[in-house]
Amino acid sequence: MKINAHIAGMPAGYLFSEIAAKVRAFEAQQPGEKVIPMGIGDVTQPLPASVAQAFIAAVQGMASREDFYGYGPVGGYPFLIEAIIQGDYAPRGVDLALEEVFISDGAKTDTSAIQELFAPDALIAVTDPVYPVYVDSNAMAGRLGRCVDGRWERLVTLPCTHESGFMPWLPRERVDVLYLCFPNNPTGAMLDHQQLKRLVDWAGERETLIIYDGAYRAYIADDTLPRSIYEVPGAREVAVECSSFSKTAGFTGVRCGYMVVPKGLKGRLPGGGRVSLNALWRRRLSSKSNGVSYPVQRAAQASCSPQGQAEIAENIALYRQNAAILLKALEGLGLEVQGGVHAPYLWLKAPGGMSGWELFDYLLNRARVAGTPGEGFGLCGAGCFRLTAFGSRENTILGAQRITDALRAL
Image (cartoon, rainbow, N blue to C red):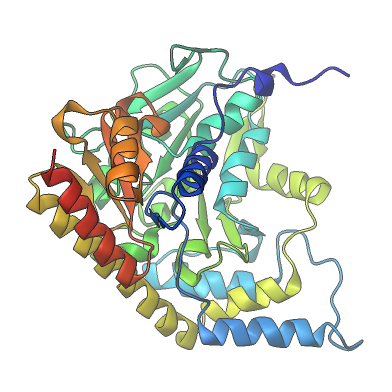
């Protein structure tokens, strides 16, 4: 058989799989040495009680003929879509129709699958550092060309550094698609309304589609900051938005998310005509997905209820406090740190001119703490390091102390 040479020619493996393998190897060589995981952004708090109860009730209902559900509607059940619109968007002054919200098993799925709507020669732009899925999915489709010395031939990268305040440098050339994530993974940076409006206006002038990943917006601590790109005038004409229940309701193992595709959003056909992205996305889903299970969607609906939101707020408060603990420890060492306020991630410059991978190895062996090397997120991540605040309070305090002791010994 012939294989997809674009996948076969991709460099290395998936970043977080590599990290997990390195940690397993270390623990195998050092029996009894338990590593504190601060690299992979997986939650540790259990499902909120009301969410779990709704999940259980829906599963039990599936055992009766009256409450059994088979294939769900394309795009998701209206009860969940309505809960998302009323809970996430209406309070921010964003008006959405049911047909504009599509339920999926997570933002990772959506941000990797949306590229199937793009032409093979579409020019893609991403921030650097960047969540690897945006790049990998386009590379697998052959859209980025070859990777030479860590650079993809046909990928436009927008540097986001400590020096630039993590505001993307906009490209001079026209691009077809720009991926954005705010609050940002991996840097924890956040944009205000004015900064986001600049990006929306730029996209409108150039007819560039923005893929906006808002998976971490529940962590924004300032109500004056935008939680949705649609709070910015003109965004409905240039942007789709993804979000997830993973890092809010603890659905990393349950799987549910959603994407908003406005009905007025258009793409260009080769002959010069226009086509609705909403219609194309619905057509793709109808052929390639049977959606998210009924019990999971009922659980997600429960997370949108007042009780569910109150329970979720407690978990998010714990993760925010964890981030504050880590931020205080890192700043106490005199390190240059971004994030930890509006996001569960902290992005730091490695001390002493170390690379991110050198710091990874040092902290793994000296502190028994696993973070994420910045090099895994792009060339601008070189010499940087990401830590997550998703651990337990006990592990966060212990990890912060271990990191402090190890770095002071340098």
